[in-house]
Length: 321
Ligand SMILES: C[S@@+](CC[C@H](N)C(=O)[O-])C[C@H]1O[C@@H](n2cnc3c(N)ncnc32)[C@H](O)[C@@H]1O
Image (tube, rainbow, N blue to C red; front, side, top):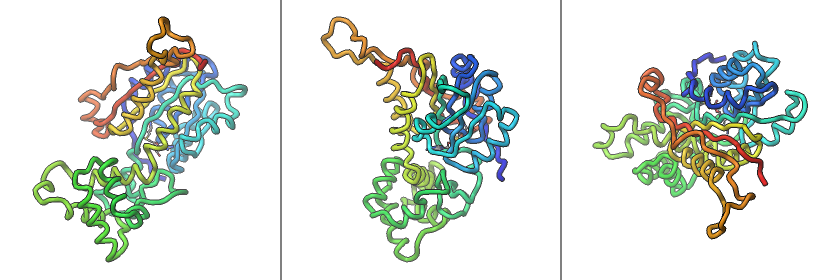
């Protein structure tokens, strides 16, 4: 089993935001992206009465977290699933006994360090490996399926939208040309195709030119944006009054989805023209963060993967009418 370290991002802030809601005996935290349980462990330690339901799509993450959390096993339920299954998971879980009261929700989106550092997963453009990129290696199509199977226009759209790649069309055309010679099955070959497809002058600036293509493919392979769009509203609906949600996003596309959903939930929906706010339209949540919070330079220096993090949090203040 891989034991690569994952340093939890903004761990102190996440714990400070969630622990007031998790102080009561039997309060439940749903960690939708358990990973190596860095945040979950800090919260189990800070909140002795809290129960954890930890979810991850990656079997390796669930196995590693099970070992790391063994001392807390009596308060922990781990589930190998995608986080858009939260309502069904909550209906099935039997610990703590009785009705589950979700008082904390955590989404720490994206890829974990162990996933990036394990070449066989195919997330890293710097090491040669099969083009996989699935968070859940037990199901679904791989990056190779997409690279070798998508029509050129669809490939270009993904690179443009999910990778914000300005040479999307050129890269897509090069991929289509190359795959006609032989299927593209390795990260190294794809990196080389991308590098050769972009203008020589831009190759010298802005880091590895394959970075944006790899991000775009990862988002498509795992349907990251679609899953978040479905999962976040469904998860927020499960939160009890007084419960808190924290979301860490790592690129602007996912942060935009989070921001929209939290702003929608915290805004008064009274139709314009009504003299007093309608009760049914009163906001169900209040924001706990002003805009998106970012890690400070000290954290980014010691953990460069925190650099793009944006944290947003909210508290449920009212039940749905
Ligand atoms: C950034 S890591 C979380 C790290 C964790 N907070 C920690 O402290 O160790 C993100 C995790 O989310 C998981 N993940 C990504 N998409 C998922 C999905 N749709 N459903 C469930 N887990 C997912 C990944 O497998 C990965 O382990």
